[in-house]
Length: 290
Ligand SMILES: [Zn+2]
Image 1 (cartoon, rainbow, N blue to C red):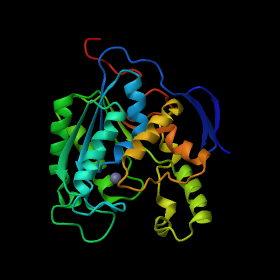
Image 2 (cartoon, protein in one colour):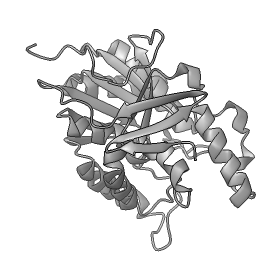
Image 3 (tube, rainbow, N blue to C red):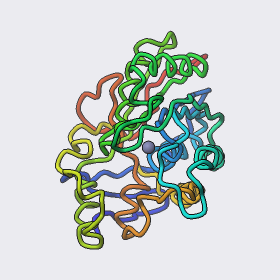
Image 4 (cartoon, rainbow, N blue to C red):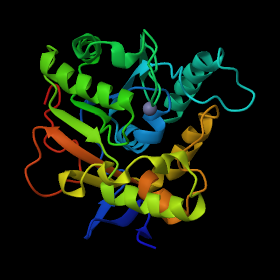
């Protein structure tokens, strides 16, 4: 067991060779702070950013989710037709966002490109980066977030990469001054642990076809790590809401699942991380009206 619970809201884990301890929940953020999470598909806000959103809401931060597609290319669970899938996933997105304490969800209306194969004519990856960035910039200007978060795209999904790059571009081109931009990361060391486990229990998993060596964000690029153990149950409830999709955390041993679900790993891009690990993504954020 590599992680250990050391008290309410505290979860220790090893990232690389270092042990991080964070206090889930952190301090309440005084004033009106807003955070925007930008993702590609319904379920990314929960499977990827669920801990971030729950921690933010618990600390009094108003959160928003911007989702680029309705997840048209997802694998429908039994009992869901492909035609019905986008509507089902949109419903799941709203229900999960409610559980995560999200104030408002915005859908951009691009089409899910799928993991591989020839993308649909309207697919997100066929939309020029500037077009996607302009739409995200408009959402940023509407909500005026102090903090923007998107996925690191290190799982290799082309839509995640496209939304990441478009979000980075949007933060530069929007009128609002975004103080902090973070990538929500899958640490490379954690993905290695996951791959080791999958090789043992499911050697024919299609996930293992991809070359695992380049997946995940290198641990030394992480800037911000904190525990969110006290939100684990609610995060799992939000994951269960996405019933049309198979959760990547299903059937993982508890210590491995908690490393994904009870610890937040971020990489700060704005301002660029400069050595050391912070445990509070809102530290030194200047709030409206002081
Ligand atoms: Zn996704």
